[in-house]
Image 1 (cartoon, one colour):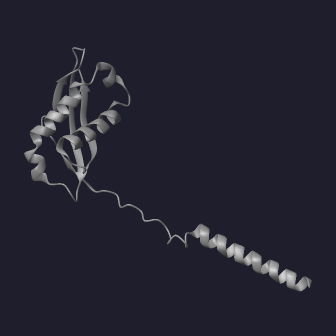
Image 2 (cartoon, rainbow, N blue to C red):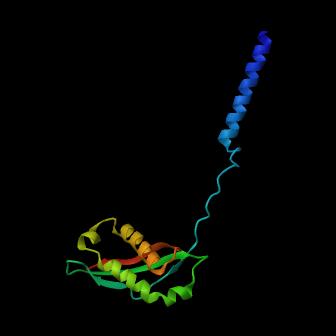
Image 3 (cartoon, rainbow, N blue to C red):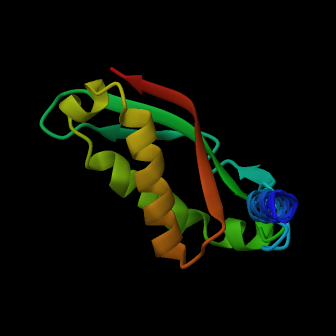
Length: 140
C-alpha cells in the first residue's frame, strides 16, 4: 500500500509542477505578448525663424525654436506645409500664455511639450504628432 501511495504522491507533484510551468511560461496564453514596434519619427520645423513672444505680466521676451516629430509612416509633408500658418498660430497662442513663473519652472519644457502636442493635434485634428524637440528656449 505504501508503494502505491508514494507513486500517487510523485505523480501529483509532477502534474502540479507541469501545470505551474505551463502557467508561468505563458504557454496557455499563446506565449509572450507582442511588443509594440516603436514609432519612427520624421521631424518638421515650423518656421525657420523660430517664435518670439511677450511673456504674460512681464517685460520679458521668449524666443523658441522647435521641431515637431510626426509618425514617419503617416506624415504628409504637403499637409504640414499647407497648414503652416495654423501650426504657427497654435504655437504662438500656447507660448503667449506662459508667465515668467512658468518659464522659470525646471519642468517647463516637458510641460510645454505635452501642451503643444495636445494643442496642435486638436487644432489640426490629427493623431500622428508624437514629439516636440526644442532647439532654442531663451528668455530675455
